[in-house]
Image (cartoon, rainbow, N blue to C red; front, side, top):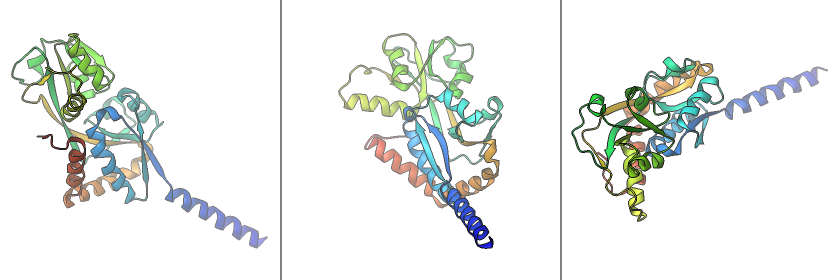
Length: 248
């Protein structure tokens, strides 16, 4: 009897250790964001590996839906989002160490002007991507059309359905350069206005059931940033995606 009890205890401990070693967190990573996730997913994989945790990125989850999934606990959090997401999705906890950022830019075919903040585009019809919260929040009350992905967004310009569109600069540059390299002339004539409308720090979010991980992953990200590792990952991703295309 005692021997059987020992076997049960040993088996339970073994299964518990195995489960802990194989712990996996799932985050949505919309491949339409291209470079943002190409940088941030590898950073998070390295960071969580130091805690013995694997992460799995779920591709092609629309931006708005991924927030709903993260907030209701279907997935474990968000790879990266703007500050303040927890106000609308209260079950998400922000990791306060920002490890990446984005530049919001204005693109157009026919309208040429100097960008001076969000108010300078108020009189134009605007295209944005659904679920891009910085764009949604800053264009409330504007005449606007929501697209589901980058290609649809720029199609709005091509077919004159909007005057301008708002996009993450690196994502837009990559999309337009890829189309040009493929000989696709559809998007010729689309230009980026300057300066960028906003510089936006991005933050990792975890569902509240993982609250105990927040201080741990914050410290690890701080260490990775201080060592220069995050910048190395970022530069490699830029080189892989853009080749000789300059990203300023």
